[in-house]
Structures are given as structure tokens and as C-alpha cells.
Length: 428
Image (tube, rainbow, N blue to C red; front, side, top):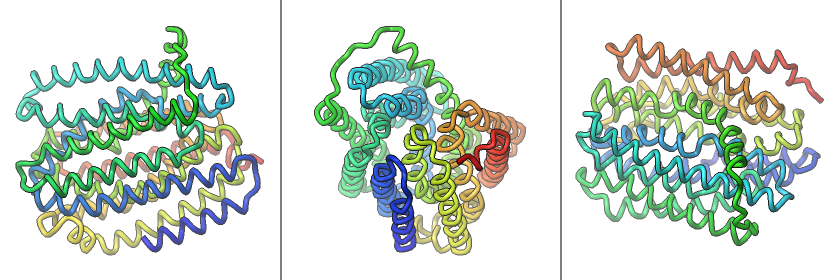
């Protein structure tokens, strides 16, 4: 973590050197999110080597497949509110009554989606043979959805008080690590992994709700049906974008789970885990910039952060590419040798996806072109799904990873074109 700590220190120093309303709060949020992402990076390096060795490739792949299935229920229940509600809260944070109405309205909508999602999942475990083989693992993993609904991350982002979100999420992840080491002893304990994950997130969600009502004086102002309908409509475009973004998050694991075996999923999920850890290093920048850019539209600061972030992405991906075999063997053990070749491809995706991510919501969407940012994701996802469908019979972890490389390059190209089309990069 020495290199990333040094980069974070230099980035924070650069941000503090720039003037502009809200830069101090942006820096505070950036540092808070960096701490959280550092924990997200370090803690899996503690638990994943243990789980891959205890569970083995097959059970580890089953747990990863269940998480990929549940990811779509997370997308359904959050329904884009983590972006649309963040923007709404950020724009009206001084209006306490309106903030309270938005807060309660989002919770009501998510509760309805939560109930519908659980009912849908239960029916799927009855009629889909792949899920009917072990319905318990999917129903248990659904506890993660409950935790995501309860935790109002969109509220803390909109209020630009991410230090609270960081503390609660960090506590949940530490609890997860402790429970894993204490109770997961053999491959037969594989169901405990999603259970402990969901338990930690649910407890963090309850604490987050309590903090919102006490620390930020949220009141239970019951919104009208039309207000809730407006919140749902506002979040729909972000819901579609999130669904599209799932192509690079869970779709590949899901398809591999249906088309191949749990073992193949295990090899892919292991390599993807390292890719996600690398990508997560840049989430603090994106998450902290989005509400700031939505209110301040400071293109000069964005350009500066963008260049630093891109340079870091190229460096870290290059180092990981050169030492991919050593890293894979160290983290997952000798039984995951096939994951090394997949991780090499993922290293090529990191700088492409990072650039695309930064040009999306923190830039295009924040400057009034959310529809275009969403459009790029939708187009890329459709292309990816079509290509996967064409190769379904011949699908392997390597082929689907190369398809992801092509898709992310396409999405980046569309966003670069949009930045040029709307003359955003040279705005004062």
C-alpha cells in the first residue's frame, strides 16, 4: 500500500492547493472514501486467500455465482437512487423538509422493490434448475440486498459527509472478516460467507439510518404518491445505466455460471476479484467528485484530478501485468493457476475502465449530460450481450474477458466523443 498511500498524499495536497467553494469538503470526502477503499482492498487480501484455500475452486465459484445473481436484485432495489437521490440531496441539502421527504420517499420505494425482489428470487429458485440445485445459497445471499437498502449511502454522498459512511462500512467489513475466520472451517461452511456478509451490511444499514435521523435531524415527512413517483422516474435512467454497467460487474460471472461449471466460475471470479480491487482504488475519486461537480462544475479541478488518476491507473496496471503470476499465486494459492492468464487481460482493462468511469458521472452527467453517459453504457452493454450470445456455445473465461476488454474500449470511445461533441473539456 506504500505506492497508493504516496499517491493519495500527493493527490490530497494538490486538491488542497486548488481554490474553489467546497474543495475542502471534496478533499475530506476523498480522504474518507480512500480509507474505505483501502479497507476494501486490504481486507479481501486477508479473507480471499483463506476462503479460496478452505472452500476450494468449486465452492468458491458457487459463492461467486450466487453473488452475481443477487447483484441484479441489488440493482433492482437501489434503482439508481445512489446517483439520482445523491444529486437531489446535494442540490437541496439546506432545505431540511425537502431532504426529509426525499429520504423517506427513497426508503419507501426501495422497500417495495425489496419485497418484490425477494418474491421473484424465491420463484426463480423453484423453476430455474441451476438455482434449484441449491436454493438456500441464493436466499441467504439476498441478505446483502437488505443491507444495501437499509444503508443510505446516497444520503451521505449528497450531504458530502462520507466519513460517516466510511466508518460504518469499515465496521461492517471488519465484522465480516472476524466471523469468517472464526466460523468458516471447511468447504461445507460455504453458506456462511454470504450470511456473514449480509449480516455486517444489515447492521451497518441500521446504524446508518439511526445516524441520519439523529445526527442530520431527518424527520418522517411522508411524501405524496406523486413525489415518490417523481423519485422513481428520476432514478430510472440511472437504473438502466446500472443495469448496463452490470456487464462489467456480474453479467460475465452469471453467464459463465449457466454456460460452464462452478470451477470455471471460480477461476474467473478469482481473477476478477483482483481486477475489482484495482478498480476500487479509483472509486473515492469518482464518488467524491460527482456531488462536487454537480454543484460547482469546476472543470479545471476535474482535469487535474483526471490526469493524476489516469497516470496512476497506467502505473498500477503495468506493475500488476508484469507480476500477475506471482500475485495470483500469493493471493489464491497454487490451485488457481488458470486465473493468472485471465488477470493479465484484466490488467489491460483497468486504465481503460478507469478513464471511462471518470468521464461518466463525475463529468458528463454532472455537467448536464447524464443521458449521454447512460447511453454509452447501454450501447456497450447491448454489444457485449450480443457478442456473448453469439459465442455462448464456445464460451470460456478467457473469451468472455477479451469481450469485456472490447466492450470497455467501446464505451470509453463513446464518452470521449461526447466530451468533444459538447465541448466540455475546455470549459472555464
